[in-house]
Image (tube, rainbow, N blue to C red; front, side, top):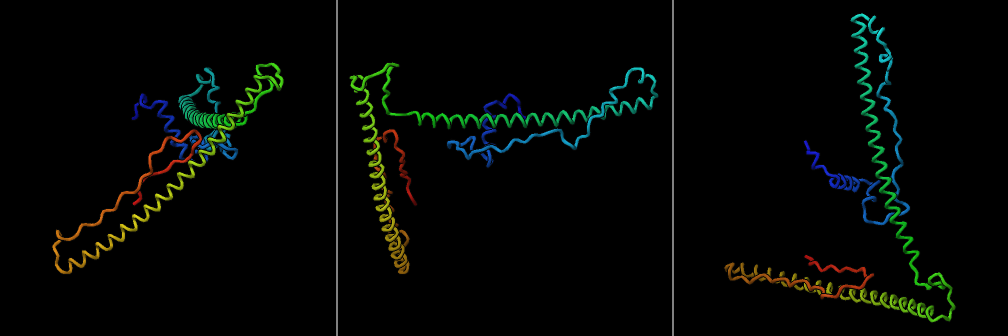
Length: 253
């Protein structure tokens, strides 16, 4: 039996997250990808009492003391039997309703997570939409003339920021292009190295066969050519904000 003290809320969250990640309809709730208009939860299922459970017969509970006193032993036994059956059916209804409530709570939790993801996506969209480099004509709640020195200074500052961002964007694009060209060059050199190594190994194998044919001892055979290491990318400075290229330097076999 699992110790309830070990079944902490954080573990329950991990269990729920891992379970959601394996489903096709709810995996987007725990994904890092931005939620879109096509991301939808399945329609809720409205459950009622199961039809397989018989309806409660409460007539046995309506017997008063006088009726019970006038019953024979067999009648009392029959009434007791009916009462036990009624309690058993009532327990089945309680278990079924507890399951329905638990399912409804789970649906509410998923809907809450869905609403949170939608709010995050909407907030990101609103933040991006509200980001502007335009200079407001009204600063500090007061009007300004177009010839006002403060307004002119703000306009020039905003223009410099736009120019700096445009220049940074060009530099990032040039950096990505240079990195791509350098990577292609390294890959070409690496392919040439592997081809030369394979050729050298083939010549070495042929040479070893010829030497074995004339009964040359194994220790006197030439050593197998060693393949050079793959050229590594040169160390570069961290790319400026907005860069999105990560070059892999793992060796290919």
